[in-house]
Length: 73
Image (cartoon, rainbow, N blue to C red; front, side, top):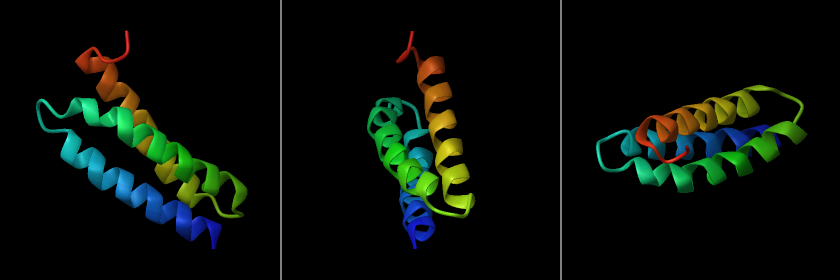
């Protein structure tokens, strides 16, 4: 059950991340990364790894996007 919650949170964060990939919306990753961290928390406590891995991918993409845009120096 926790993995399903993690997958749902990760899917929402991924969809928001896809929208934030458009120019001038990179600041949205400051909101998306904490959402994915909550999903990662649920994924860590679950037995399966798919929810955890999805949220890790969203977090890494968000951090890289912020670094490219100058949001994390």
